[in-house]
Image (cartoon, rainbow, N blue to C red; front, side, top):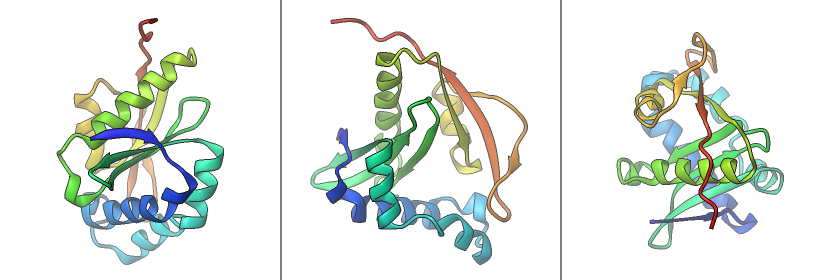
Length: 158
């Protein structure tokens, strides 16, 4: 599996991964509630993905020729997306994407990365060095956001 910057041409496939990840893997969060799913998915469009690719750092994990995962980070270190294709779950895509985001942040001199975790992903982040940064906050519908942060370690110079 390899990680590379997303390209505008990736938008349709990337947003499909994000949408399927939410629908199929985040049931602990949306609990099958159609109103919650509708709210969560409402901005997950190919047009928005193209905008996000143009405005932020968006990375894709590629396995074979397929997008296995999608992550995005804003210039201030806020991780906006980290989703995996259901068929690629537990194959290392999200871990690899987060590693690349941490390298990206280190090269930019950022001290912290932040994100709002889903309940589904909370264990993943905790096991990868992230810390809870506050109480859970209301998310979409029945979901809760779990604020988290992680100190950025300095990347070795080459």
